[in-house]
Image 1 (cartoon, rainbow over the protein chains, first blue to last red):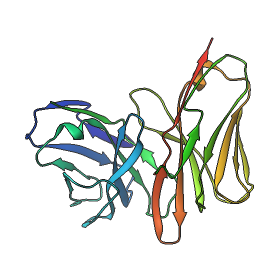
Image 2 (cartoon, rainbow over the protein chains, first blue to last red):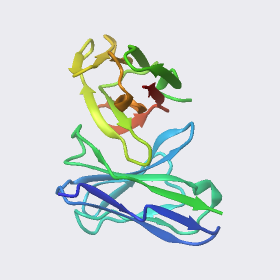
Image 3 (tube, chains in turn red, blue):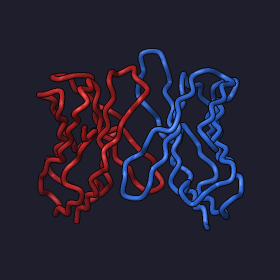
Image 4 (cartoon, one colour):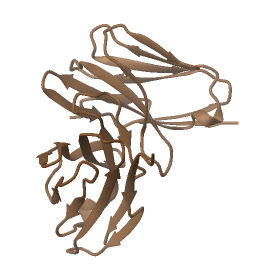
Length: 113
Length: 112
Protein backbone atom coordinates (compact mmCIF):
# COMPACT_ATOMS: atom_id res chain seq x y z
CA UNK A 1 0.00 0.00 0.00
CA UNK A 2 1.98 2.99 -1.31
CA UNK A 3 -0.59 5.66 -0.37
CA UNK A 4 -0.37 8.79 -2.53
CA UNK A 5 2.52 8.93 -4.97
CA UNK A 6 3.67 11.88 -7.07
CA UNK A 7 6.11 12.16 -9.93
CA UNK A 8 8.43 13.81 -10.64
CA UNK A 9 9.95 14.94 -7.34
CA UNK A 10 11.67 17.93 -8.95
CA UNK A 11 11.16 19.68 -12.31
CA UNK A 12 12.59 22.74 -14.02
CA UNK A 13 10.68 24.24 -16.93
CA UNK A 14 11.21 27.19 -19.21
CA UNK A 15 8.45 29.74 -19.60
CA UNK A 16 5.89 28.52 -22.11
CA UNK A 17 6.66 24.82 -21.79
CA UNK A 18 3.97 22.36 -20.84
CA UNK A 19 4.10 19.39 -18.53
CA UNK A 20 1.98 17.02 -16.50
CA UNK A 21 2.42 16.33 -12.81
CA UNK A 22 1.39 12.80 -12.00
CA UNK A 23 -0.56 11.71 -8.93
CA UNK A 24 -1.78 8.24 -8.06
CA UNK A 25 -3.36 6.63 -5.01
CA UNK A 26 -3.97 2.96 -4.24
CA UNK A 27 -6.50 3.39 -1.42
CA UNK A 28 -9.62 3.42 -3.62
CA UNK A 29 -10.35 7.00 -2.56
CA UNK A 30 -13.07 8.84 -4.40
CA UNK A 31 -11.87 12.36 -3.58
CA UNK A 32 -8.56 13.72 -4.89
CA UNK A 33 -7.19 17.24 -4.97
CA UNK A 34 -4.23 19.37 -5.95
CA UNK A 35 -2.70 22.11 -3.79
CA UNK A 36 0.18 24.47 -4.28
CA UNK A 37 2.32 25.67 -1.40
CA UNK A 38 4.17 28.96 -1.61
CA UNK A 39 6.23 30.69 1.09
CA UNK A 40 4.02 32.88 3.24
CA UNK A 41 0.85 31.75 1.44
CA UNK A 42 -0.01 28.41 2.96
CA UNK A 43 -1.62 25.63 0.94
CA UNK A 44 -4.09 26.71 -1.75
CA UNK A 45 -6.51 24.43 -3.55
CA UNK A 46 -6.08 24.30 -7.34
CA UNK A 47 -8.54 21.65 -8.54
CA UNK A 48 -10.36 18.74 -7.00
CA UNK A 49 -12.33 15.67 -8.02
CA UNK A 50 -15.11 13.92 -6.10
CA UNK A 51 -14.93 10.84 -8.30
CA UNK A 52 -13.89 9.47 -11.68
CA UNK A 53 -15.11 11.74 -14.46
CA UNK A 54 -15.90 14.65 -12.13
CA UNK A 55 -13.60 17.62 -11.56
CA UNK A 56 -14.06 21.16 -10.29
CA UNK A 57 -12.06 24.30 -9.69
CA UNK A 58 -10.55 25.31 -6.41
CA UNK A 59 -9.21 28.63 -5.23
CA UNK A 60 -6.41 29.13 -7.81
CA UNK A 61 -7.29 27.15 -10.99
CA UNK A 62 -5.99 29.50 -13.71
CA UNK A 63 -3.21 27.99 -15.82
CA UNK A 64 -3.95 24.42 -14.76
CA UNK A 65 -6.07 21.61 -16.18
CA UNK A 66 -7.07 18.31 -14.65
CA UNK A 67 -8.91 15.16 -15.63
CA UNK A 68 -9.98 12.07 -13.73
CA UNK A 69 -10.40 9.10 -16.05
CA UNK A 70 -9.76 6.51 -13.32
CA UNK A 71 -10.25 6.39 -9.56
CA UNK A 72 -6.50 5.96 -9.04
CA UNK A 73 -5.01 8.79 -11.13
CA UNK A 74 -5.42 12.56 -11.05
CA UNK A 75 -2.87 14.33 -13.26
CA UNK A 76 -2.32 18.09 -13.19
CA UNK A 77 -1.41 19.75 -16.50
CA UNK A 78 0.37 23.04 -16.95
CA UNK A 79 -0.40 24.13 -20.49
CA UNK A 80 2.05 27.06 -20.76
CA UNK A 81 4.24 27.40 -17.70
CA UNK A 82 4.82 30.83 -16.17
CA UNK A 83 7.29 31.91 -13.46
CA UNK A 84 4.30 32.54 -11.17
CA UNK A 85 3.71 28.79 -11.20
CA UNK A 86 7.00 28.13 -9.44
CA UNK A 87 5.84 26.32 -6.33
CA UNK A 88 5.63 23.02 -4.50
CA UNK A 89 2.63 21.00 -5.63
CA UNK A 90 0.88 18.47 -3.42
CA UNK A 91 -1.70 15.91 -4.38
CA UNK A 92 -4.06 14.64 -1.68
CA UNK A 93 -6.78 12.05 -1.42
CA UNK A 94 -9.49 10.94 0.97
CA UNK A 95 -12.19 8.31 0.94
CA UNK A 96 -15.08 10.66 0.15
CA UNK A 97 -15.67 14.39 -0.13
CA UNK A 98 -17.04 14.53 3.43
CA UNK A 99 -14.28 12.43 5.00
CA UNK A 100 -11.88 14.08 7.42
CA UNK A 101 -8.84 11.82 7.00
CA UNK A 102 -6.85 13.24 4.09
CA UNK A 103 -3.53 11.87 2.85
CA UNK A 104 -0.95 14.00 1.06
CA UNK A 105 1.68 12.91 -1.40
CA UNK A 106 5.37 13.87 -1.01
CA UNK A 107 5.11 16.82 -3.39
CA UNK A 108 6.66 18.02 -6.65
CA UNK A 109 8.96 21.03 -6.54
CA UNK A 110 8.53 22.96 -9.79
CA UNK A 111 10.71 25.83 -10.93
CA UNK A 112 9.77 27.87 -14.00
CA UNK A 113 12.53 30.07 -15.41
CA UNK B 1 -7.38 38.44 3.64
CA UNK B 2 -6.12 35.30 5.37
CA UNK B 3 -9.10 33.42 6.79
CA UNK B 4 -7.00 31.51 9.31
CA UNK B 5 -4.23 33.35 11.14
CA UNK B 6 -1.54 31.27 12.80
CA UNK B 7 0.81 32.55 15.48
CA UNK B 8 3.61 32.69 16.06
CA UNK B 9 4.97 32.34 12.55
CA UNK B 10 8.32 31.03 13.84
CA UNK B 11 9.19 29.43 17.18
CA UNK B 12 12.58 28.15 18.33
CA UNK B 13 12.80 26.49 21.73
CA UNK B 14 14.99 24.13 23.73
CA UNK B 15 14.22 20.49 24.27
CA UNK B 16 11.99 20.00 27.30
CA UNK B 17 10.17 23.33 27.06
CA UNK B 18 6.43 23.67 26.65
CA UNK B 19 4.82 25.68 23.88
CA UNK B 20 1.47 26.72 22.48
CA UNK B 21 0.65 27.75 18.92
CA UNK B 22 -2.58 29.37 17.87
CA UNK B 23 -4.97 29.35 14.95
CA UNK B 24 -7.50 32.20 14.90
CA UNK B 25 -10.28 33.37 12.64
CA UNK B 26 -13.25 35.71 12.61
CA UNK B 27 -15.23 32.98 10.84
CA UNK B 28 -16.93 29.93 12.25
CA UNK B 29 -15.71 26.52 11.14
CA UNK B 30 -17.58 23.23 11.33
CA UNK B 31 -14.30 21.43 11.91
CA UNK B 32 -10.65 22.22 12.25
CA UNK B 33 -7.60 20.11 11.60
CA UNK B 34 -3.95 20.27 12.56
CA UNK B 35 -1.20 18.91 10.31
CA UNK B 36 2.56 18.56 10.74
CA UNK B 37 4.83 18.88 7.72
CA UNK B 38 8.50 17.95 7.67
CA UNK B 39 10.94 19.32 5.09
CA UNK B 40 10.52 17.74 1.67
CA UNK B 41 7.36 15.90 2.63
CA UNK B 42 3.63 16.39 2.49
CA UNK B 43 1.51 17.40 5.49
CA UNK B 44 0.42 14.62 7.83
CA UNK B 45 -2.88 14.88 9.67
CA UNK B 46 -2.53 14.98 13.47
CA UNK B 47 -6.09 15.59 14.63
CA UNK B 48 -9.57 16.74 13.65
CA UNK B 49 -11.78 18.63 16.12
CA UNK B 50 -15.46 19.12 15.37
CA UNK B 51 -17.19 20.26 18.58
CA UNK B 52 -16.84 23.68 20.21
CA UNK B 53 -14.75 23.35 23.38
CA UNK B 54 -13.44 19.95 22.36
CA UNK B 55 -10.05 18.89 23.68
CA UNK B 56 -8.05 16.05 22.17
CA UNK B 57 -4.76 14.64 23.32
CA UNK B 58 -2.16 12.84 21.24
CA UNK B 59 0.68 11.80 23.58
CA UNK B 60 2.39 15.12 24.48
CA UNK B 61 0.21 17.18 22.12
CA UNK B 62 -3.06 18.75 23.30
CA UNK B 63 -5.48 20.27 20.81
CA UNK B 64 -8.39 22.52 21.71
CA UNK B 65 -11.23 23.87 19.59
CA UNK B 66 -12.64 27.19 20.81
CA UNK B 67 -16.15 27.29 22.22
CA UNK B 68 -17.33 29.48 19.34
CA UNK B 69 -15.49 27.30 16.79
CA UNK B 70 -13.49 30.26 15.53
CA UNK B 71 -10.10 29.34 16.96
CA UNK B 72 -7.90 26.48 18.03
CA UNK B 73 -4.68 25.89 19.90
CA UNK B 74 -1.98 23.25 19.93
CA UNK B 75 0.01 22.77 23.14
CA UNK B 76 3.13 20.62 23.23
CA UNK B 77 4.49 19.47 26.58
CA UNK B 78 8.20 18.76 27.00
CA UNK B 79 9.05 19.34 23.35
CA UNK B 80 11.52 17.01 21.66
CA UNK B 81 13.68 17.52 18.56
CA UNK B 82 11.36 15.11 16.73
CA UNK B 83 8.56 17.67 17.13
CA UNK B 84 10.40 20.01 14.76
CA UNK B 85 8.33 20.87 11.70
CA UNK B 86 5.74 23.15 10.15
CA UNK B 87 2.41 23.01 11.96
CA UNK B 88 -0.59 23.86 9.80
CA UNK B 89 -4.17 24.39 10.82
CA UNK B 90 -6.96 23.93 8.30
CA UNK B 91 -10.67 24.63 8.65
CA UNK B 92 -13.81 23.46 6.90
CA UNK B 93 -16.65 25.98 6.71
CA UNK B 94 -19.46 23.44 6.77
CA UNK B 95 -22.76 22.94 5.02
CA UNK B 96 -22.09 21.80 1.48
CA UNK B 97 -18.66 23.44 1.49
CA UNK B 98 -16.13 20.69 2.14
CA UNK B 99 -13.13 22.67 0.99
CA UNK B 100 -10.30 23.17 3.46
CA UNK B 101 -8.79 26.58 4.14
CA UNK B 102 -5.22 26.42 5.41
CA UNK B 103 -3.35 28.81 7.64
CA UNK B 104 0.20 29.81 6.73
CA UNK B 105 1.70 27.65 9.45
CA UNK B 106 3.99 27.86 12.46
CA UNK B 107 7.56 26.69 11.89
CA UNK B 108 8.75 25.04 15.09
CA UNK B 109 12.38 24.22 15.80
CA UNK B 110 13.22 22.24 18.92
CA UNK B 111 16.92 22.39 19.71
CA UNK B 112 18.60 19.51 21.59
